[in-house]
Image 1 (cartoon, helix red, strand yellow):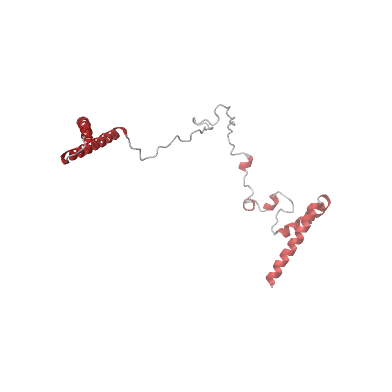
Image 2 (cartoon, one colour):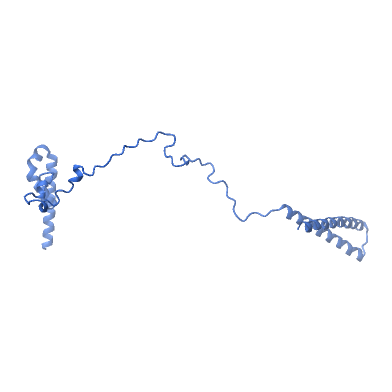
Amino acid sequence: MASLWRQFSKLSSVANVYAKACLQQSKVLANRPIFGSFELHRVMAVSSAVSQSKCASSSSRQTTEYTPPSPYRNPGPRRYGYVPKMFAGGVLPRYGRRPLPIPTYKQPDNWSKKKALFGQNDYIDILGSGNVHPVDLMRGPEWLIGFNGNELQRLLRRMRFQGNKLKTLYPTKYFQTRKRINFLYKKYNNHRISKNR
């Protein structure tokens, strides 16, 4: 390939020399007033040779100097100007700070009173003698222990147990409870009447 390129460069230099000589001769002929047909053809041939040599020299210069652009887009600097504030040096979430205290390990006591007696009264009527009922072991407000019913029945039961206490110590709560009882009484009765119709 290199030898071919050398031969081409030699040929182009020879063509340039010949083109210059022809150009000088054409200038000489152009100064003469009358052209013969043979001389006119010679001038035209010389001018065409000169134009071809110029094109060849320009094309050879282009092939050596011009590089085509890449078909792929050249990406610029990614996230230019962004300064990350997070630590990315490894698994150290508190880099440069005192680590948090780790609580001391406590051996779990699987036979503590809470764990050992968990669910002891679930089947008291089966395991026991039958004298103790699960309701007797429940804790909570006295008007809720062993209760099963709707909201109106629950509020009426509460007023039976704590009506006087609420009226004396918590009059606002007593008023709200009575208001709710009146509303539920109308609601349940209307519902019942519309069903009968």
